Length: 424
Ligand SMILES: [Zn+2]
Image (cartoon, rainbow, N blue to C red; front, side):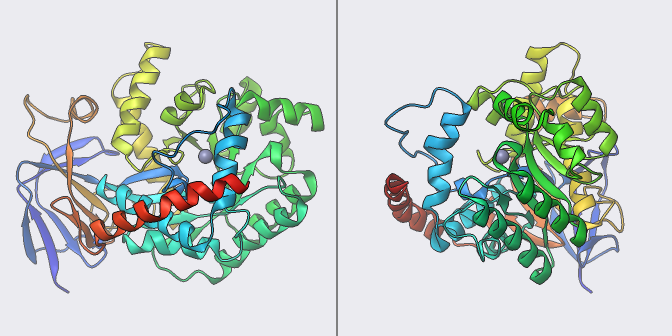
């Protein structure tokens, strides 16, 4: 097997916290071996692949979209007037195109794994294959799910469950996995919730669901079930080890305790939370298992880490530059859990060969003690990206996707999608 050797760079193992000058060897889809083609990475940092723990690739054609005539005043109105109209306007072509452009941009930003949460209520069956195909086109790892919801009736709630099951049972893409998705407690009644949880547990697939993003989710759960959201979910078996909850902004102390005790992961999305004005998640209380997601804004995890840092600093002086970097590491641990690869993110022999080469000429000394400061305050530029031993980005260009052609197609189709939203 011909290998690859990255030579001359500064190797930064984020989870090990080590920084050293050494060669990185790749053999097949894993680190290890020696020799092979030498790639000069001098002047660069080499890190493990970055993970987006919560994305909505379906928003890939939404950038620059005109706002609704009647501007939303709160979170529920943002959903009703923007995202729940966009998702209904999606059909096979736009689901695929959104995923392809979102995955391409994530790859160019150094993201090697996208954990996606998909919705297209008018085009449910088969949608996850379109999303998975879009991610695969960019050569990335992906974990997809369909967000189950009763907001268009229980029949479509059931169709959402079926789509998750169908995908998990039929998917054979080596770099793609499935989860069972749920929109949020406030749009899932008990009948659909039961079916969703049963499907996940029968298949041994983790759940991926929004929890307490806005106070409205808590109010709904208290009004209808007499329980706060996380307690409702836990009581129905929807919060167990390996599950993934997004946001958790309005969790109270008793729910935080339940989340921590469950061993579930939390995806923190600081830019989205600020954009929607929903508040700040209790990230310090939530403990170690907090990873970072973009919630559909883009696929740029270094941008999200910077926002995470600034928001945390503003909220309390207790956190330093290591805090957002540790969140990126938790993303790698989450991806490791989803792919059954405990060494994911490490740059050691035997680990999956997912890495990012960052062009970064440090203006001051860089070592183990201050790497986080360089990543958060510097502007490292993504030069190359490798997933499972294959280059997907070289010198800032995707190796397989015709970027200009894809962007041109998106610019042609997006206005038609925006127009179609007026029907809903
Ligand atoms: Zn989300």
